[in-house]
Length: 94
Image 1 (cartoon, helix red, strand yellow):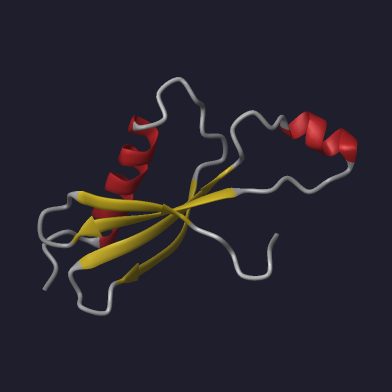
Image 2 (cartoon, one colour):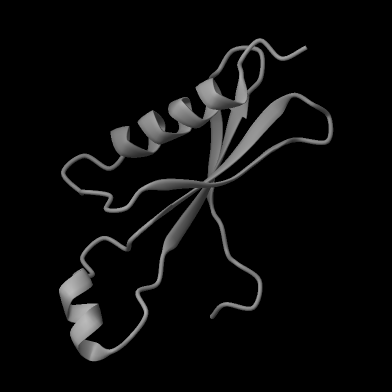
């Protein structure tokens, strides 16, 4: 049975990402995916946010859909420690 709940793991992932991005505002930060690793030792949390430096207004004026950046963060189920962060690439998106 996990000691760290999925909600706690998601909060830890958000705190971690915000903590390593000092001075950069992560607009529209959201939990996108959550699952437990096959061995049950980690929560895998995918966070999405608007790219840093891309103005929503400029994207709208240009008529383009704003892309999102995704980070996949691994949180230890027992300790709640963040052990890894990777860039998450979506299938079929260039």
